Length: 219
Image (cartoon, rainbow, N blue to C red; front, side):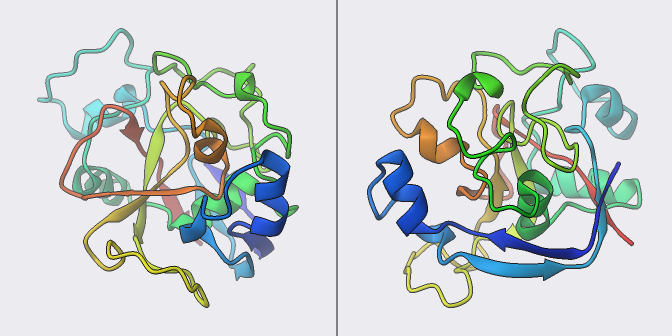
């Protein structure tokens, strides 16, 4: 695991900066506004996404159709991901923790900086095992937070403090997922999807072929 130190970081999207820079509509990423300075206590987070090698120890009777046990586990629902982390004495990260671990403290939009460089992350056709040569490494040395798999977080899909954005999906119906995933390379909204502050959400009881997770731990 990687230690994320205590301190303040920029959380959310600044539409005046981000949307002009990427030529995105003002409504893009509205559920991740306004930008805020958030202070967190230190915590631990997995350096890599949980792999099948890890997960099979927890659920050995599963039927896994994979090429390698070193691939990140996917197709598990939120409850399964949560149970695995708890089994290890850990937990799922909140979306605020996830964003800090991916973004660092300088307000960057991607793990590598502010330039949109899709080749730096795995947005291709298949999930890949951890790769030490990847450029998708956060300032805190956490891997594959811009690509490979979307990831479950502990957080319910709620409005940000002081947000004026209204979404009928807000509440305790959906869990937030973070991070872009494979097969986004031909998507018209790839710039938006790959930004670290971008939020997505899903019913916690469903499984998705492009969604995995990593665990966190309080100090």
